[in-house]
Length: 487
Image 1 (cartoon, one colour):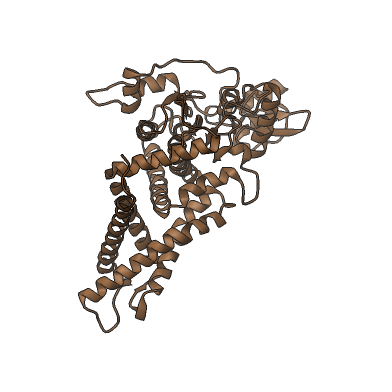
Image 2 (image 1 turned 90 degrees about the vertical axis):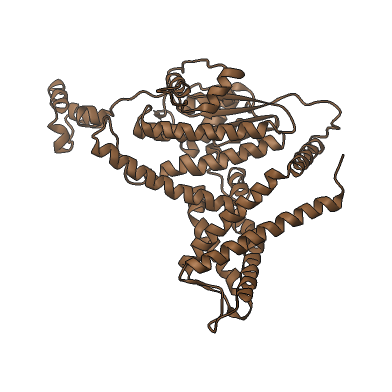
């Protein structure tokens, strides 16, 4: 039985009022705590007047967030997702400054750097309140699902007279090998498994099946074969093509676009996701029309870049943007601390983890994860037929920290929570879904060539050819051996 329209409108107004009240209280609390944030005139105001000032400021900030923020994000679509994430604090703080300036009689005052903090806390509080009320209102959730399902049927020209077959969600756990997964599913020392959600799936509905990659054991070859049906002439992650005189790199946008076109031509079709599919966080599109953070189309420029519009939907909510930005900074700090700990403990083998790597890791483990998981949940709620998403967090960390390191296990635990969230949404989707977990390759611990032999492979070849190399590399035992062999 459908609820009367007046009850639906009443529930919406109640939620809006509750969020407004929480935002007002949050603003009052911050004004009392932060020295550079005030909600009263120079002559002083009564408690009632201060409360009214806070309500006006919170209301103006909420309206700006709802109306102006999506326009700002859409205007910045040409920016990479990493840059957009870093701009979140500044944009949100700027809107709070505007909201404070709209308070009558100039009763509000805040410093720009303090406005960034206030805006972030208010966005988080409002988002938490809105989410809590939406979860509590089960009827509203069901009505949303019904609207999404009806919209989908109208888009596809269906009358809804027959039940749709189950959809499929492919979640690629990038770089997670069979042995590593098995270890993450076992209880150790009376402690729960690292990945309890996946362990529960294995006990009930799923089974684990190992498989071996072909000659090229890396994401480009595996994912190209899965999504486009052919990985012919992909010998490695990076290789030199004599015919074109170019170096092909699997995770370079221009190379990925070329590889995708070749695979589609050889296979004779556009890919696995051609019919009502979505590609999220992958190297290739799989023929999908719905894209987010897909590398093969990342080089396209213009406001209608579909891959970029995928993360617009996520950052259009300032609360999402703020939460991701805070988590991003926390992950940068976590990587710096973990790297320092590994260096102090003299853990081997080790690779360099300085420079831009902490930010690259934070993008892979936070920004990419948040955008992809949110996009997948949206795809499930809209009832798409096939969804393929690549979660790259483990692969990025394991390459630098080791596949069985404590750092990598922590990432696996966070990925498990993402899988649990997606599975929970799938249980309430407008159609049944089958969730397939798969991996593209595994990893094994080992030193780099330079770490093992004291010079790079290029340096070894140069020594053997009698070409100049850095003095330190030439003096290594490997360099001396290569020099003698060359003679």
